[in-house]
Length: 423
Figure: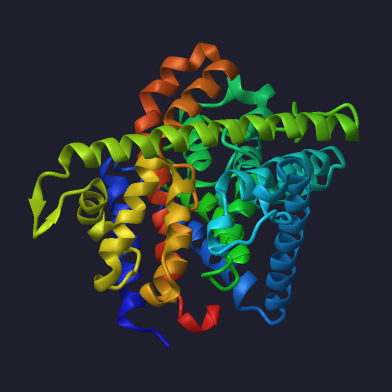
């Protein structure tokens, strides 16, 4: 049964696409067929995992796999960190909730998933899944082989690892294809962080693992659409053909585990450093502006972000009464990374936020589109294709806008669907 909130999400979907068109380099080249196809692919993917009979079994399997990975990762963390990671406590604990430590309970999961992903890639399991999605994107959205493979790789790998998969074709990509690769990289998340997000939300959102997985998959077509709207492909260009070979290779299973762990360690160190610095900067800003009273309370960056992003959150289909808090989460994602935003979303008690808003925010937050990722993208692509660094720098802020809007578009598509699908 459709409601006004569903219509609100549909309106938001139109506004998001219109905003991208407003920044288009060629407004006459609006891809109508791609727009309909991308939204159709998004809706079909959501329905496939939530509405088709038997899909709940799949979701239960995903949740069970995440739970199993969480237990396994905690065993490894407890072996190294002992009671700090949730092992046997040497003293009586008065506050069980205070035992949860982000560094010891969440970050080790990224190491385990990174190593496992590398092993599955070496065994060709993840590679063939990626190729399957690449084939689908190539046939349904008219992407060139190399672009389609990069888009598919972004669903499971990071925004820098996925270009490595098509490294042999980077010099053949057009400006539009490079922009598309950047946007999709910012609109999705890596498999290693998906599980961490699901772990953070598992206590407050039913089927959290399924929602996070679907969010990253479904945001890929949204990123493709918005990228094609903002920087359309010129007639006669593009379509670099890939033979689906890959530059991402490992010598053996052990080599995959070792290198995957090393890559995961870099991710963990980057996340830890960024969280420390950005949270400290927010605290510093709050100290500087806290003397300013607004409506009887001290002004904080969180309140400012809530006001600025209130209409943005509302456009996804969030109720007006909750749009302020949801808007704050979107602002946190953009400035402090999606990791902080997911942590804050997980802290909101179930009674203080509706399940619909929490679900929509899960989709809206599930992407690497934040200010910190701008530097990571520029640095990574500059190493992979130094001759096109200026081109990347000229498009990076547009890519950030498109990547941020892609997850909002995904949330709007989900919000436009009847609530009974997710029951």
